[in-house]
Length: 117
Image (tube, rainbow, N blue to C red; front, side, top):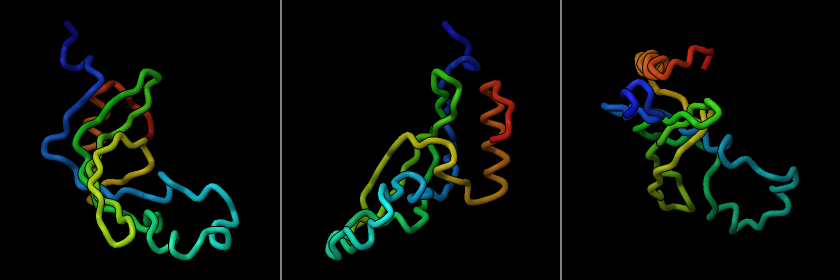
């Protein structure tokens, strides 16, 4: 069996508080979205303008060496917060505190990845 350092998953305990950058996850697909999208859809749709607080609970390395994170967060859909637990690519979330950013870097280094993340 693989040693712990060779496993592709790292639980983050305690979780790291992050901000999910919704517009990077679900960016508008067309330039004219404002004029083409009905007002009721715009007001009731998933809010992509905001940064959503979340908790990074797990790091995963993909088969090609990318780092993704399991993040629990609650995006606003209309006036209701949804509860999501998703694997999100690097760059779609950021740690809220500098201390957590340093801790995150240490966790990534444990995978043997030493590149500018």
